[in-house]
Length: 248
Image 1 (tube, rainbow, N blue to C red):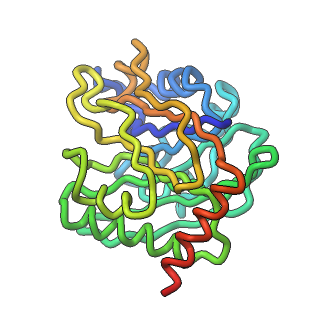
Image 2: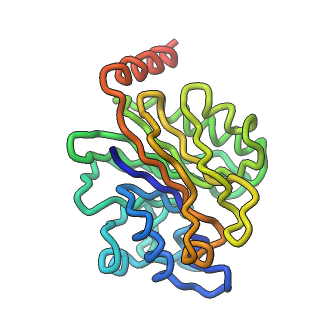
Image 3: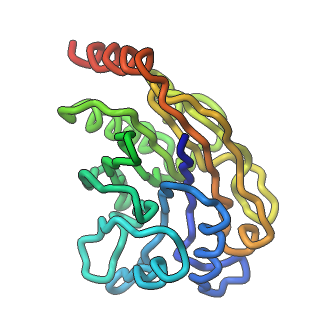
């Protein structure tokens, strides 16, 4: 079993409108995850520096960041990055380009956790419903084009207000869509913007919103997490069936 989490950190700006990266790192430590997808990790203006320094991440947590940024001081690809435990091996990383009115992208990493090889995608979809659907389709199409199909976890801030339809309908065609709970706004959660999506060969053992006192102050989103395990031979067959369905 392994734990994944997704967290929109709003450039490390808390609900008091003060930038406090250490508070974000404290929340990440509380999550005790193996893999975390972060959204809005970089500042939006100027050189788009990361709001979390790699040295501080290494000092305060059990994580190391996977660099997706194209600028020297950035960690994210359009704000998206992935943190992994220091003993998790990075096999491949890839920036996914998404259609958008505003700059949007997704970050992909193939990872080795012990004997498990998995694919993780972190994403932050747009504010307009039509573009969210196009972005979901673009993510799925790019995944389908990869040579080696792997057990896959997609997660992030989807900006989807309803619980079905919209971009979720595209993801639900061949995946499990998990809504761990109400994650926005952190002070008074009323909508499930943050989702975790898995391929059919992954079993969801548990999932929830992390709503500690620190988390309610650190960002306007609460982090979401899920404990996952692979299904073995049955899961392998499901993955092959999905891959074959996209081949025609």
